[in-house]
Image (tube, rainbow, N blue to C red; front, side):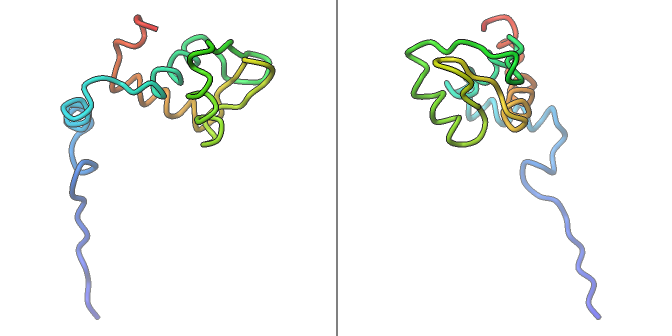
Length: 103
């Protein structure tokens, strides 16, 4: 019987600080999707009773995120984050903490 030793390699094998530094090296700025998810998270749009208005220029991004399951459309122009969207927003804030003050 053979025993295989599995080792983690790549980004996930690094400490969290190094992972963040690597991500920021290749993606120095957050994308528009990340920025929108983070803004909604900071404003508390995390359930149907707490929605946030989306600007007209953000509607294509919001529709894309809704299709991907990260946002849910509540009413005309108002959205809230799904559990997946909340998770992504929290991770984005770990990588780009400056979004806490810029959004």
